[in-house]
Length: 187
Image: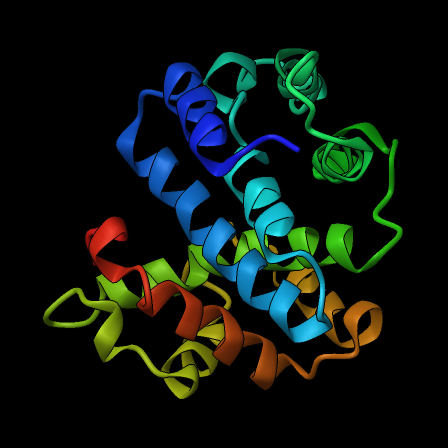
């Protein structure tokens, strides 16, 4: 299985934008926490989170190719079928192919958008710190559809049906995970 060190080397070689890297770190932290919740392989889930958007800088103008480049880059790196399938499922919204089918893939689908919402909530706090964010503050902003309007709330809400995790709990899991790496996220 590809190591975390090799994963970070690959991510950093393909993604130069620090904010995009931080997004991948946030998703990785949440995925690792969700793996723990499901008693799954935390390392593998974290790797999926790190790599899910790794080809974004190269494919942003051609969203239908998003994730396909990453899978190509992973050839010969012993990423494993579960990692490859999870990364491919990440682009389901653009391609209609590879719909999420298990807890790993649905976790990625649901938490990806949530990390962006949590960051947006932190950035409107006076100190701009994750430590000042609570699940209640995220839920309050959740109700304001104009706040972080690009966040697909319906995608996040799938956590209840697809993962059996109530929205409030899902937000708390993600928030706690992100707060644990606040320094890496510069928040």
